[in-house]
Image (cartoon, rainbow, N blue to C red; front, side, top):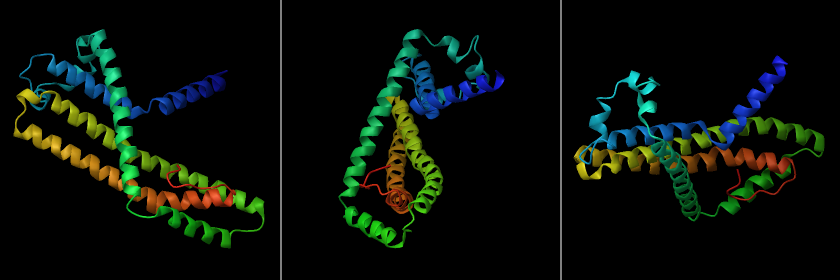
Length: 219
């Protein structure tokens, strides 16, 4: 029974993190703490108020942050988290489409595929097991690829949190917003480069060995 309980618990955690990645909870936390700060007044700056927040306030469930958050703020934080996720996914996909127009990647895929076709074994079983080994490598590469977008999403919500208090913002606040936007752009570019140079060759090799068709943009 203990093993069954552990298996069910593991599956539950996997399902939760797959449908709602852990970094989204951090995004929601940033929204919650920003909401708490800006509820104090219109002339509030998030950067200055963060200096006044103690760590024990965050983790105090009786008199801390979570205890002071209203149900309305909690619901709004969930909605904002979903909106930020959606907005970033659109930014990411549009950026990807824009970057793909800089070169002919179909020919790049064809060259790699032809190279693999010429070297792969005639024994399908051997090709299958090689592809399975590559699948393990691809799982790690997918994780790294997602990490670029995770950071960008956190940068985006951080920029929005600072922008929220635009009326009272100083030059430092606006400078931070610009830096965060720049980091998002850099991360998207790095993710694209990683996809082209590291992920795609492995993916094309795996799919070619399995006899599947590969298109640019597949993950």
